[in-house]
Each structure stands twice: as C-alpha cells, then as structure tokens.
Image (cartoon, rainbow, N blue to C red; front, side):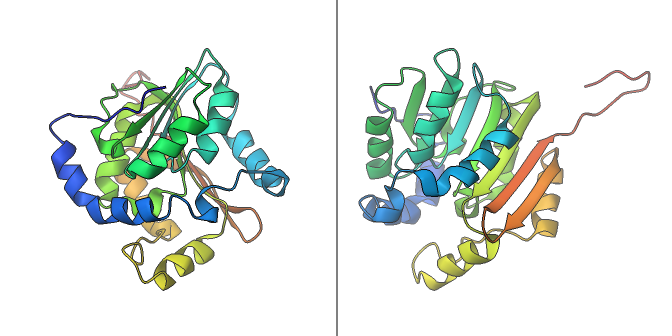
Length: 229
C-alpha cells in the first residue's frame, strides 16, 4: 500500500501552519498512548461511536488526524470493500504506521498531509470522524468549512474523544509542549463554529466514563415552495 503525499499548491501554507505540531507528533509515534489497540476496555466507547455512525457498510468516510491508524483500521473494517476511508495525518511517522496497520484494506487510503490539503470533491463524503484531533486544528473555522464542503447533504460530522472534555483539556494544558493551547471548545463556542460552517448539532454528550461525542449534520435550507437547496 502506498503512502500518499498531497502536492497541491495549498500544501506549503498548511505545512507551515502545522510544522511544530507535526514535529511533536512525530516524537510521539512510538509512545504507548498512540499505539495501543482498542481492545475490550474500549468496547463501550466503540459501541457508542458505532451507534452514532449508523450503518457504515458501503459508506465513504474521512478521518483527519488518523494518527497511527487505530480507529482507521476499525473504520476500514466497518465500511467494507464497497466503502472507502480517506485518512490523513500531519505526522509522517504516524501516517506510516497507519499505512502499515491498514495494509490489507485496499479501500483505505492514508495520506501524509493536513486535511485541508486533501482534494476531495464537494458532497463526496458520507461521514467525517474527528477522533482525538479537533483541538489540534489551527484554524477551526477553515477546518469546519472544509468538512462541511465535502459532506453530503445527508452526511454527518462526529467529533469524538474517549475521554471527557475536562480531561482532554487538562492533559493538553499540562503538556508544556506545542499542544498546550490545543483545547476543545465549550458547547457554546463549538456550536457557534459549527453553525457558521452550516452545520447543526444533533447530539452532544460529555461523559466522564465514555468520553466526549458530538454529532453535527448539514443544515437543510428550504426555499419558498418547500424546495431544498
């Protein structure tokens, strides 16, 4: 399986924007938290995620910030050979690990790039899964705008962490590294960001045991006469 690198013109802009983060996550590529498989202890969290994803067989999924591919493998298995998973990460070392982890899935493509560089068409994706990555987007309005652009009108965005918002933000603040300011916004802040991108919250939960999960869908606007655009 080939590891793809997006060479489009915007690459230099976003490569510069994420340079320090990419270096940091390269340094984390061998750390346990980035590599442990999601075993039985994660079963309830994965079950909740699966419920909110809905039927995945045959669907097209975008997974930005895929890391070492722990969830990518799960998604590739779930969508099956009639679906497709577009995964990407700014860390070359993590993207290589994700590529190796999904080697047996011809319907999964791992790119070493920022999500914003991916050349995906408008309305080409059924589901966007931001797993443990949303706080790290440097320009969240731009990132959400891209995700809204590639989502189909009946698609959905999931922002999910297997820890609560409080724990995630506390870990980042105490890291003393380039991620110390990468925080998950509160509900009011993230709702405003989503609405500005044309997305609307359909589910929001922040559970100390199960973690954080937000589901948002494109806003369906109706013209006079009931027509949808």
